[in-house]
Image 1 (cartoon, rainbow, N blue to C red):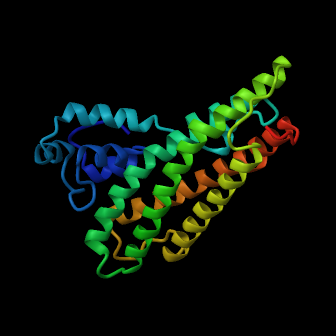
Image 2: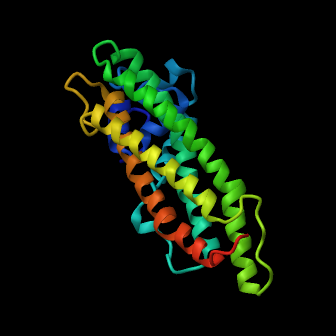
Length: 243
């Protein structure tokens, strides 16, 4: 679809991949105000049309992580870690604020008639805080140790001696937190009838459920790479040594 400020916001939201991301970021009402032209919507939001058109171009090139983008699971662990951080961690960090914003909007409008939304918001909020802490621990503690461990083994030098004993200790904690996040998303899926918006659900409502479903799919791939490849290989690399 050609980017044209005379098109309606709704047409652009449904016709351009990830257009809603740009609209949400810039405060363009693509839900109740979807019948307005982009030009009129920009005037109402006090945002230059050129900025929105540029944001739409950028949004259309956004690619959600997928199985097709998975790395070579037999390659170096440092490469696998780089993929997890730059693909899946980056995706989570980008989506969490967006999903919080969407939840706030949908709950404020539909929460009275759909009380399950409040439960979804509460569950997501708890999971979000845990995931944020989880990724920080991986990026600042566990992953650097695994990289150092792999480098030591490759160079034939002494393995690093972490304060946490063996790599299996933090790995066990990360796996427990993976289970917690998975359980939270399963509960959200159940509460949302498998991410199916009700008949009275607006465009934002449907966008929220689509985004939550995509988030769950990405988390499954994310956890798969860590639980089934990175963690077992790191433990094997350490060889069961006590640090």
